[in-house]
Image (cartoon, rainbow, N blue to C red; front, side):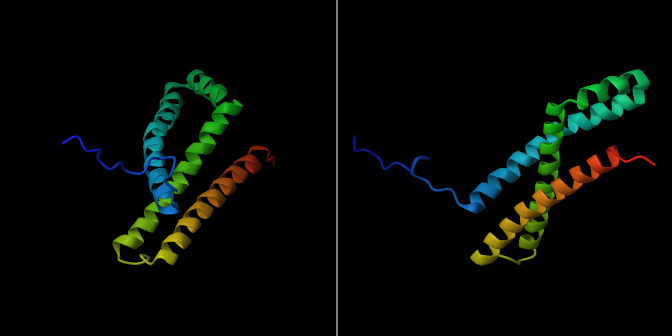
Length: 131
């Protein structure tokens, strides 16, 4: 009766695959977007509350750590969007071959990275742009 039961593979021996990593990242970015939307609400509330509140908000968001958080929020937004489009193709029945899964996963990461860099480049270009 007290025979040892087989154990599932421990995390130390399990080799993560791109599909599982992207799935976990999709969930994490979804949660972080939900939490990060509080920043957007705070921005709108500060904007509606007047110049003093908005100035206080801008002083907080001009810190390097706030930029890092906003950069991560931007990446999470683009990653979640790109992976959501990938899932829509799967819902339509396309891209289930193993080669397509790996290609689309790499494309999701590449697209999210390029869109994030493009967005922040655009922001910094127009921040220092004078007429």
